[in-house]
Length: 257
Length: 258
Image 1: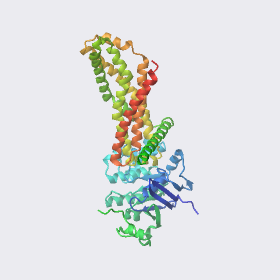
Image 2: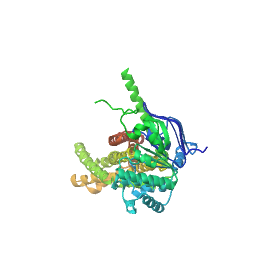
Image 3: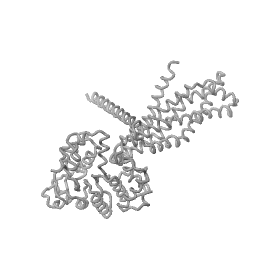
Image 4: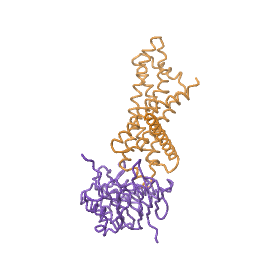
């Protein structure tokens, strides 16, 4: 059996009294695009950040390419993170740097590439996400939300990572721009041959991006399956989420007025 | 029992904060001496701290020197000791007021800006983004600020010393009718290297503390705009208090035997 690109076994994490991850088991095969769906506050972001090492899980195992990563020292962690690219929910562009410096950041700081060469690559990557070279000299604050997301995407793919994470890539965008971003994600992942993990609660996005879909609920993966099976999952929780119904097994905590 | 529990809880929180600050300081210091360093970042911070603080520090020093001369004149003339004014001005400025007032002004200007900038980077996930781009945030954000604070505040204090003494000179000569040459003579006469050096040592430590507090509170800020606001306030208040405490300790180290 081939080694999965990413494997989580029984990962738990709590903040204070609140258990956010409650024993996550998840495997992502090399080259596949997995979308993790789930409501707000179900632990999606915490799971991604645990894999990246931005948060340390309380227990459990996280393996990347078969190598245990939960106890890495910071130097080894930096080396491991070269394999990863991430598009943050709010794009998280560095506002003190120009657009092209943002895209080239990993190349200049991480890979120690000369600035002129890094700039050429940055402009090329901006082209790949549909932004012209004139955008390169702007500062991130001058861009619209959709453009910031695209710059964030260009930054995530600039170092040609093996694994790319997308944290709610379409949140806060209009439906057309959301679809543009979805197509760019599919395109970039295919071009790089990368493994992709996306977390979202946008079903249109999930259907478009995913090879496989996993649903997270109360800090656990409760269902995984092929993207085409999402509409007949036979799981009441998944059905409720996919169809966006207020009534069902998932009860929202709404205080009585 | 409620009282005991509350006391214990507060004490534990205090210990936790102290430990976290110590770890943060240790890690940041180790990144100051381990390559790779980020020269661009260091230079940017140096210009921010050193160059752009010049007006505010200069004005503070000028008026402090002037008021010192004026105050000591009105006080000293009661027992015919007006001749000591130049000495009082130069010793007060170099030993105490130069570093302390420059430190407090820089804490307000730079400490707040650092906390706000790093705090905003924290809440907008820019610090997480740094990590995912294989860049250690302590090395990229904190170390350059500490280095810049440590080196630039002493330079600022040298300028503050000169401007402060000049302020005293202006008031002494043009308002109190001292002879210019004898005022300058008096300024040099009792000034020793240790007076200036102790002030510069203070300045270096203050600069370090200001940057440390700005980075620490910014780095650990959470919860959006309100969290960043709290971090900014905490950075300025804690830096100011630490400046005053360390000022006393360093003065004790340099001058307690006399």
